[in-house]
Image 1 (cartoon, rainbow, N blue to C red):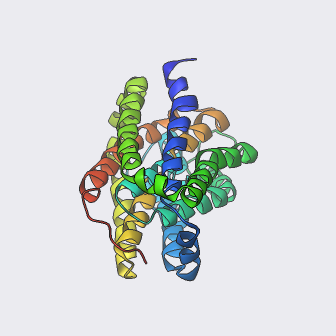
Image 2 (image 1 turned 60 degrees about the horizontal axis):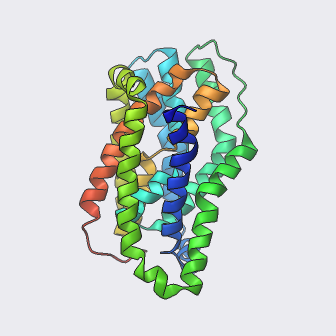
Length: 292
């Protein structure tokens, strides 16, 4: 097993699971019932993620006249849900973690249905020679979501419920540990995939940067337009711009058997780690604020 495979198949999922455990220790059931009572933030986040993001991806692919392979690679990325990394960034930025986790979970399951249809259209529209029938490994995807998010968060919430003093005491150390893990993963991913990332930045660096900035900006503006509280604005902003790159790579390389289609994801990973890191640096210093 290569270093890159070791990172993506073992270290990265394990690290994210640990991060999710720490997040679970900050959550209580009331965090989620509050989202049912105030669904506006959830609806805004879902529309940004499931509707506006793919539309922006299509628009940029057409505007930059990308080659069919790069265009479809960009659409693959734009159709993917937010990944666990968005939950980590939201936590460090002191956003609404429950909202972030809820959006990640819902979009992850809904995308099982939406991704095949959107990609089938993209493959046909951009005129690639790939087969237009795409089937996601539904069971594996569900297991991935549960293993990295639902199960560790549930364990963390149980710890919070039965060992509340321990959970509160570990809040700051876990946040620091999450930041350190984030930085280490970022450096490791760059070193392990340096050749691919160099090519990616040269071919689609600008368009992926625009995708990241536009989607984050749109998330921020729509949340502000509907007068959401700061914690929810942070969550929607992050969820709009941080995608599940791991899933995008799986679709490109394992389902469509085209490594080149994974190039936009490689470039986007650089930008989302940078912009996510900037948000963590700036917003992580802010005092805690009330959520909606």
